[in-house]
Length: 553
Image (tube, rainbow, N blue to C red; front, top):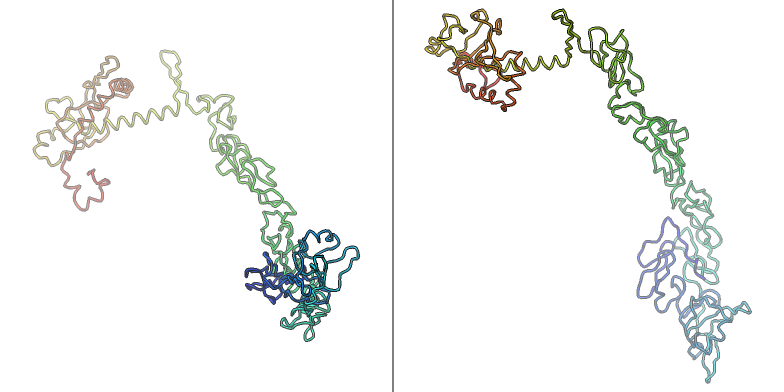
């Protein structure tokens, strides 16, 4: 049989169209001109007319090698002058159990030399059944020509291929011996038809293959056709993996090993993982909330229970109240509290530390202080012999002061723009006798006058009338502005007196009930446009002093 006839090097398969075998020495002879399998020459749809054999290399009218033609599977159908009868003929089928054919199916009307089962022998020549005088007989196909093997094949059945070092040399067709050269690299034996043993290659099979995967290398070149064993790389798989790589052909990278590098064979970290990683290959990052070696530790008291760095456990967003340090694993020292321990305890009783979480003085406050954190000052006022304790919270006091300052500033701005200078209200003069309203209107050169506190006349204290919380604005005075210089613009609008601080709450309450109509009206009364001459401010040397383009001093 020719089933294992054609063997080629895996490193150099035939790549020529219409050819196959070692060094592409054979032509395909497939039916319909189809291409054959590049290594064995197998034709899927059979051989073209006139050829037979594995690889379709034999002519139909010839027997190759030994004379008996035991491997003949051609299409010749003459026995003497008679035509062969189909082996499937009903008159012949009764005899078929006596024979074994090389064909995959019972052949048709062709010559064959099947094995005689009971004798385990062959006839001397191919033969077939014929019809003679109405009877069934058999006769030899004597017209078949016995010939030598095709080039590059040898043996009594021409089922062996020789491999000479000179690839064009035709070996002996009986023995396969290479008369003019020796065997090609990767082959040995008299007929140079035996490939090197496993893991051997080269001339006379004298060389060992490298670290090939599955212990398979090309017997001619030594190349590892399936790749390298884990831990090796290179053309011949003789190079060990460099540090940090592992696996077949060293194509994989090591994880985060704590000591040295991983195993070049399986990639495992022998000494464990670096902090922040886990798994056999140390490539799995710690899940949120854990850190350290093999992620065995839980993140400490991070702010809002947030994550920490998987390698170190450092809290990226700071600490929860009561803890401090990079890992937030240390409690606040005495006298500190809150997130990252940045809060300072108040005045606790006997100087004891406060609660590290919220800053509360658990044992109470020192004398003179109050509140959960003991930051509010306790003020004691004596009135009619009775001790009345007035608690003034520091935070509440600050808010109140800010509100008062904001309102006073607002009233001052409005007052400075709406102040009416009237010669008839002598008891409320704000200017010196030398500066009168008429003189100012005549000149119209300088309308912004500086009012000094010592120019104010002494007035009686302002009086206030209350009608369900409403403050009579026309009863207010401005004597509380003493000792403060004020710039004002002259205008002809009526003046609105400022509101005393002690009446501020009632004023705001009433204004809220009327949707702040009073304040809106005052806003509408504010003068607009240029109310004073500004020659000096517009001089080139003074322009840089004006902070805003639309506000001129």
